Length: 299
Ligand code: CP
Ligand code: NVA
Image (cartoon, rainbow, N blue to C red; front, side, top):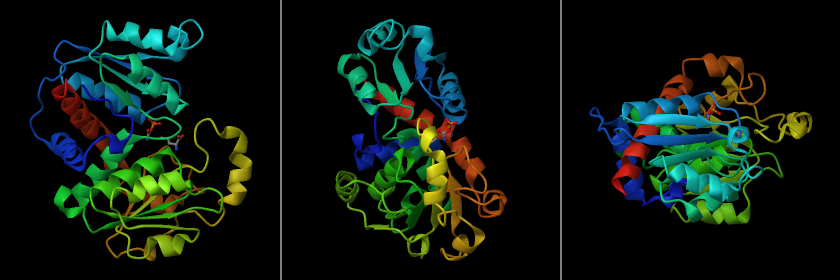
């Protein structure tokens, strides 16, 4: 049995297999008659809906749970909630603040645990992102050798994207304001994928030659107290048409969403012809289905 807490829990071959399963025309009944518990400590539009529908498409029954409904770590420990959910479900997805909560779940779980976003990682997003890039540039085999430029906060989405892109042979450029880049440990982990990685404080340096320009919110869920300060510090890191023009001629724009127009991306880029944010959102469902089929095969 396997868990999926971060993209590099997978080998490169396994990552490719999940992308293939996500893009496959035939859908197996991998969860026929089975349940999947989906626990959300934070809000969600895409992850909840894509996961629920992926489970339905595989013949299963998704059950979405808010932490107050089970009293996560108040009425009962995370470990006891996990053991209980294992009695009824074939898999558990969780969106949590502390990544360590997911690790506590895996320590006691008899079913696969899937990270639906933690403060550290968003692997299901990265899988959908790679599927979107592959669809644009000639399939999974067309990913290697291309460059993805991430502009903004080196957050959960940036970390999973960098690891996943590195694993499929893409070059990775990350431009952040000073003080908002990856830690040394993160950089070592990204470089361990074998990628050509550059961290910079200059968005224009990052996008030069990039096939994909990617951004995410400056203030992630749980950091709301810092939003005014972050708006000041991230000035100059908005993805504008001028920045897109400095990327490769066929460059696409991507954003995991939700977006804050006028902050990390201009309205014209988000709504413009280079934007792929809606196919990207749809691919959350296809990638999730691929990941669930693969996880069920590993039991
Ligand atoms: N991209 C993403 O995870 O969106 P939600 O927060 O709406 O699930
Ligand atoms: N970095 C964002 C991603 C939302 C999908 C957050 O954690 O809020």
